[in-house]
Image 1 (cartoon, rainbow, N blue to C red):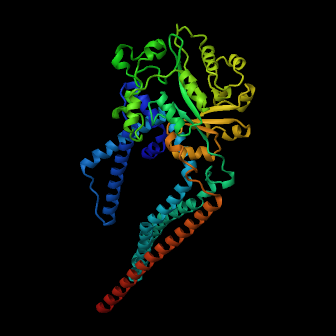
Image 2: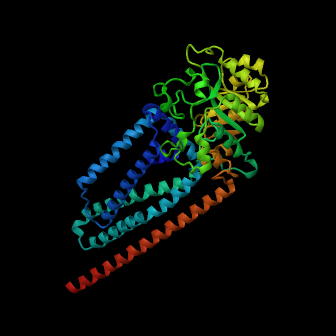
Length: 513
C-alpha cells in the first residue's frame, strides 16, 4: 500500500521536498528516497514470500532465520510510521490515489483478471488433489467397514477444504469479471465528446527548464506554447512589486553568500536596490539543488543563461506578457506589519499593471482583497475565485475559478461545468493527471512540466465505451477458457494417478489372496 500510494502521488514530490526544506533548510529528494525505500521493502518482502511458497510447495517445513525476523520487523516499522504520518498530516495523498483509480481502474481490472488466472494454477492443483484424496479414501473404505464413520468425517473435512479454497476464489473472480459495471472513468467516452486540450499556464514559468520566477523561466514557458504565466508577487520595502514564491530568500537566491544573517527575513523587508543585486539562477545549475528529480540535463548555453538570472519585477513579466499576448495569473503576498504598503498593496499593484498598458482581459485577478476597488479601476480584469459554491461565485459575479486539482474532482466538478464556470486547476505535472483533466473538460491547467505536457496531442488511457466493452468481454471469455482448461488438465492428471493407485491396490490384493 505504501509503494502504491507513493507511486500514484508522484505529482506531489516537489511539494513534499519543499515542505521538508522549510523545516530543515536542506534540499534533498526525500520523495525519491521514500520511493526507493518502499520499492526495496516491497521487493524484499515479496521475494521472501515467494521463497516461502516454493518451500511449502515442495513440502519443506519453514524455519525463518533470526536475520529475516529482524528484517521483517524493520520492514513493518517504517511502513507503519510512514502510513501513520500520511494519514495524520497528508490526507490529500489519499485523494490523489483515488483520482488515479478513475484513470487506471479499467487497466487494474484487466491486470487483476490476468493475475487471478495465474493464481488459479495452484488452486486447481490443490482442489484436484483433494478430490483425488477423497476418492482414494472412499476406495479404501470398502475394505475397512469398521472405520467407515471416521473415514466419512475425514472426507467431509476434505470437502469442506475444497469449498473453502474454491468458492472464495470463484466469488472473487466473478466480482472481477463484473467489475466494469461499477467503474467510472472520464477517459472512457466517445471521441466526439472529448473536449479540447486544456491550455497551459506555466507555473512560475517553466521551472524544469529555467530557474523559477526568472525571466528565463517565463521565456522558456512561452517557447513551449504556454497560453498563460503564473507567478507570485511580493512588494519590496520601497514599493516595487517583484516575483518570488517563498517567504524568505534561502532557496532561490545567493542570500547566504551576500547576507547570511538576513537569510530568514521576509523578502518584503528588503529594498529593491538590494534585491536586484541578488543572483536568482546559480542554485538551479547545482546538481544537489535541482528542484525536480526528473529534469532533463541543461545545455551549456542554458546553464550559462541560468547563472546570470536575477529577481524580475512584475513590470518585467507584464512587458513579456503584453508582447506575447499571454494571460497572467498571480498570488499576491501581503506585506508584513510596518510595511509602507501594508494597507494599500492591492491598489499599488493595480496601478503598476495599468501603467504597463497590457490588455486588461489578459489579467486573471486572483487576490480576494479589495475586489470592489479593483473592479472600478480595471473593469477588464478577469476575476478568479477559489473553491466555493456556484451560488457564491454568482453572487460575486465571478465566472473563473483556480482550484487545487486534489480538491476539485471529489467536490462537484459537474456543478461548475453546468454553470459554465471556467476552471483552472493547479499544479499538474504528470501526464495521467493531465489526461484526467483533459477528459473531464477542464479549461486550463497550471504546470511545472510544460515541456512534456505541451507535446501531448491526445489524452493517455483514452478509449471508447465500445472498445472497452470488447476488451472486457474478450478478457473475461479468455480467462474462463483458461481456467476451465487448467482445471481439466489437473483433474485428468489426478484421475490418472487415482486409477494407477486403484490398479496397484487391486494387484496387491490378488497377490495377497
